[in-house]
Image (cartoon, rainbow, N blue to C red; front, side, top):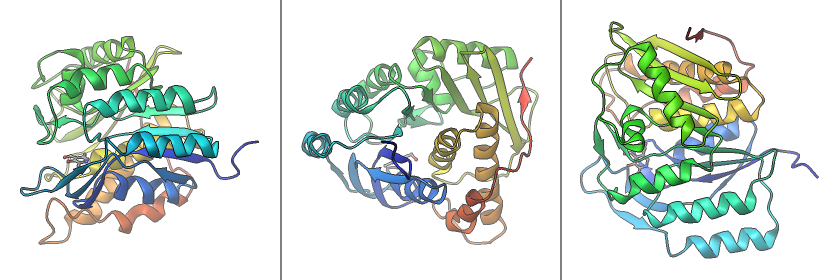
Length: 290
Ligand code: PXL
């Protein structure tokens, strides 16, 4: 029997402050009409970019949690992983996917580990190889440009042409995922624009969505992007519509926040914009990359 409310296993950390992972994933997917079952990978006082963060790694607890879910006979329509508490967890998530996925289950791996050319503070270097291996199990992966470079063993580019973006997407698809997406693309000759691109290896097409750049970085926007993309694909949207909706949602959240003075990088006003996810998708614009 199908789950009357589609159910998603969300394998991410719980960070008390800083707008990321489960505190972003749950409200977004829940507003989009999904039951979210969190499998917490770690509990933190805040995300790891805030000095003094406290991290409690749940690696020893994961096998017991997963066994309980197996005993309960849970079935999932989506499996969506993100920040892992240790490199060993990647193999656990991989086994989780082998056990719980079915032909109709969408598997999304956000290989959260790095940004701006550097691994996050808690990330061991082995995480790169482990995330690359985990990505082979996913239908969709959503690395930012730094994570994509690390997974492919390449330098993080300062700028890229559209042809290079296509070649990177093909290289990511070669790792296994049929729909690779790259965010935070440094497009040459496109100052003032934020680009995300995707490839559907089934039909060979490449897609791009872009928005005017707002001159500020807020934490958690990558998690917002991947969560909306996951929800949109699970709702049955095409890849370019899902890309466009995710990009639009992040742009709306940034604009809703930027107009206030005094809000910091960790204070994006998510709840101000989550209700927009409950309405039918309104296309703002995507392009086919020729
Ligand atoms: O937003 C990605 C993310 C998720 N979880 C934790 C993080 C980060 C990025 O820094 O530190 C704990």
